[in-house]
Image (cartoon, rainbow, N blue to C red; front, side, top):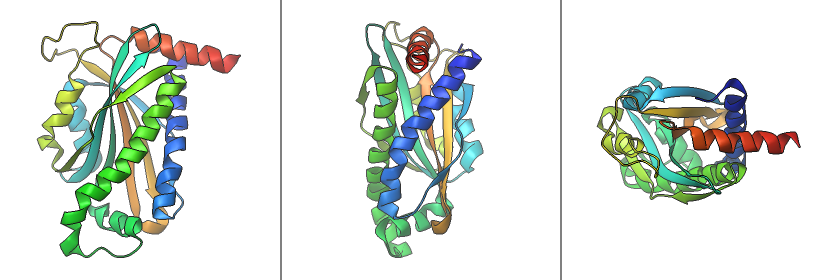
Length: 221
């Protein structure tokens, strides 16, 4: 697994990546955004949905975008990025986005499209910057919207149960694990808060270690 120096480096990359992405959201809602320092954990893949439920309880909105990082002359990293909001902050989030109150009767009709449009810009900007820092190319997949209890979000978990391209897929293994990066954000004047997460398949992390070490070397020059 990653050593302490490599963990610090990938947290710095995530911080830089989200730092490039959040101004887009700040402009859309016309308010300043505060965000936390990155958190990194290594999480068994089978526990990722429980991890989400621990963050948001039994009701939330999330946009999920799977992606591949194609590393120059090395390999391929499979990842997932998510924009996550608790259901109770959805109404003030929509109000901030539209610049006026969105009646509850209309929220169901606009929620998925509005939230997905915002997430597409935010998440793709984030992973594009991360890809550049890792000296790779990125292939983003079509984003998917979920709402409700995380236990029902099977699509997220199935996307995380993947192997690097160099390995044959044989179904989910008990030792599958992901590097789980999270930054929490808030918009105090709008009463909005949420999280941006990146999960990277770490079942075989040799390619990731090489890419992170190259970033460290580049920063030291």
